[in-house]
Image 1 (tube, helix red, strand yellow):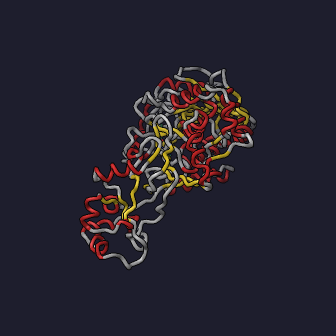
Image 2 (cartoon, rainbow, N blue to C red):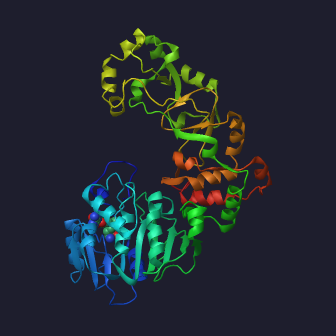
Image 3 (cartoon, rainbow, N blue to C red):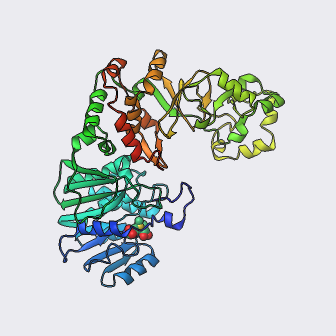
Length: 494
Ligand SMILES: C[S@@+](CC[C@H](N)C(=O)[O-])C[C@H]1O[C@@H](n2cnc3c(N)ncnc32)[C@H](O)[C@@H]1O
């Protein structure tokens, strides 16, 4: 589902993924899919009917009664079914020459209940196994493809997540096994100018065949066209699966940079961060206002210093490279709430602590979900002292900050713990090199608003070359590729 702002509040429009497609995109996708005036065209989520209104022989499915009525009025000759597409697709005997549209992008948190169960069951029967984390659009496209006649085509708006989200790979695997041509068109500028979501285009043809390549085109701007772009890179599905772990985003970079990157990644001296270290999230207290104490309050309450652990509350608090004791001293001088009340599970607590965990604030805190579900509620689990903090939502670049002050951290930054502490200075020196920065761009993913996000599993995949190999690499080999990847996540232009 596309979101207008980064607010997590769901409007009915967001909940249904109901954002309608601009006319030039509609016109292009319909003509990519159609070959003949007689072709039977399906739009599985037709909204107000804009994909079917220009073609006489068309069928639209729409769950929203008002939108379905609108579709009926703009395309009175078309067959419009009001209801859930997956229910209809499971029962219909109809087959189509082509399909076009813009499926709802409803994230897994909202894509639930019967509709999701139907969608995932139907796709499983068709051989595409989606996990519960799949957004609605991917199962929509598998189910749509299965309704095509031999030789059929389909052309759709898709979220740019098709280039990196793990849940997009069952879709792409299904497409390469069922179509002669699969073509992904990445569009850098927004197709929906008012929405934060980036959208790309997907075209597939020759249903009933299969292919060993994915055509990939990247363009800065969308231009109306009668046919899918003639220029494309042929991405080998073996390379896509093996070298790039089923991500298409690396193909936004020039071929030369990709080849050099793989050469370095495959070198015997290169390691993935996950081989060297454990990357995880920091602790979740459940009630930071209660558990994070200002030094003045801790002193007033008389909390023993061994129960107060200096903590990094968020990425903004971190210095650029090294968190030193003098930074922590400054936090203390500023009376920032930097002490985590780190209590053992025992009931044998000092009187000062007992008094604090019996206050009204404590009664409120122990009702918080995370506190309610642990025993005892006041003992925050998973408090670690990492070697480094890693920012997981970053602007220009992901920052790795050395922990020279024995702080812990909340889950607003990642914790990195090295297996071999002798590697600390090597990792510290490697981090800001262009190669490692590019690796962050490729292993992480865009979050909207110009941000790069690194999940722990993504951070574990960051490639760390041996210093010897790094010294041999041409100085400017990766800078252009970094700028290019940043421009595709709209860094500096958002
Ligand atoms: C992104 S809009 C696209 C509408 C139109 N095709 C367009 O692009 O302008 C997605 C549409 O899917 C509809 N929808 C959401 N879930 C559906 C479902 N399970 N079955 C049928 N339609 C659904 C929404 O009501 C919404 O109108």
